[in-house]
Length: 96
Image (cartoon, rainbow, N blue to C red; front, side, top):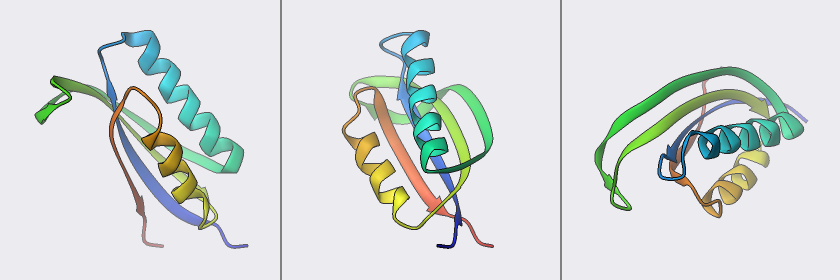
């Protein structure tokens, strides 16, 4: 089973506070580590959103590079979509 390189950008809600943001970041990096290899974690911090999402104008951005098999990103996306506190996310396959 060949591993592929991926990158995920996650935007977390700031409405529940900094502890909730850290908990979400830890949850998803642990999930990635359990199913692949976590590379660089780039913490962009609080940024103004281009448009309001759920009446929020700021979000907390985290970018994670990781390696996993080809089935895992779909499962990761499913878990992110049902998790409260995630405003947006995008998973892309990186070129070799």
